[in-house]
Length: 192
Image 1 (cartoon, rainbow, N blue to C red):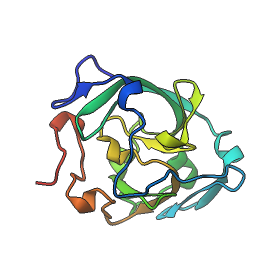
Image 2 (image 1 turned 180 degrees about the vertical axis):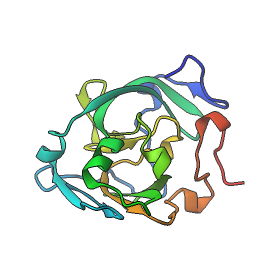
Image 3 (image 1 turned 90 degrees about the vertical axis):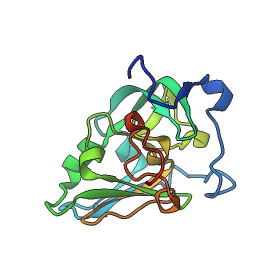
C-alpha cells in the first residue's frame, strides 16, 4: 500500500464500482458449494495436494492491506485481504526445480498465470476474507488470488486449481492482448 496511485489510475469508492461484471467469461457467478469445494495443487511439484475447504482455512493465514487496481483505470484503496500466502502453499507442495510458472484455473473457466518469482512474492494471497468479512461470490468468493502489484485480471476469482509449470501458458485475457506482466507501476496494460 502506498500513498501514490500507479500511472493512469484513479481512486474510486468501493461501493460505486466494486461489484462489476466480467464480460466474455460467464454471465453469472459460479455457485460454489463449500461442502464439495476442493483446491487442487499439482503440476511440477513433489507433493500434489487436494485441500477441502475446512482444511484450507485451517492453514496458517495472513492479512495483507493493499490497493486493488483494475486495468480499466480504477483503484480501490486499502483493501484488507485475509488468506493463505501462495508462498506458504508452495512450501507444502514443494515445487520442483523445473517449475518456473504458476497457472490458475477457476470455477468459471477463467485462467491466468504468473511467473514463479511473481507468484511467490510475500504479498500474494489466496484470499477468503475482505475487510473482515467472508469473500462474497461477486468478488470471487469463496477463494480468489490477490496479486497487489499486478492489474486485477491477474487476481483470479473462484480459484479451484493451481498448476506449477515449466513453460508459460497465457491466460484468458493475456490471449486477448493484455500484458502478461501486468505491472501496475509500469502502466503495462496491453501486449506491445
